[in-house]
Image 1 (tube, one colour):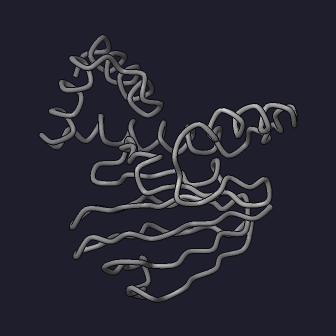
Image 2 (image 1 turned 180 degrees about the vertical axis):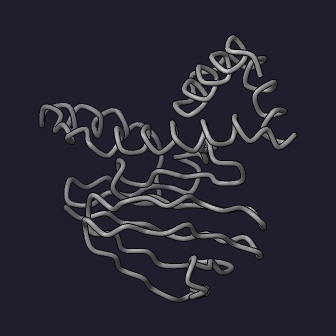
Length: 184
């Protein structure tokens, strides 16, 4: 590849990893990835790792307490099966949507900020090595996932990794869904 093409790929990988690549360019970049371009793939993995670390490094901000009350007051006009209460958080099945990560075949669905989420991996997908900034609790809901040491976690299995530990790449042959909860 020429230097201009390498620079273009670096920029596309960086923007793709944060979800900021325009649709047409996103499709072109995904075609490069699907075509097996090793440079594009390596750049994506590098930028995705940085983007994830940046997302986890941002401190959680607490909104003004009056904001919660104002939002709950507005919600009282919408019929609900459960009375809105200040001491519980209820996330309905259709309230949050799945978001594709810049890692092919991997999606997340936030449940409670960035600290509690569902992860869905398509059959044959993998997730690269990463360091845990927080204690991570993982409960496998569907399918199975295998770590680089060959240890398989099946639906119903629970895994906990301490903050500061490095998680080697994981993959799934069957596809899987798991719940992740981070604790500071």
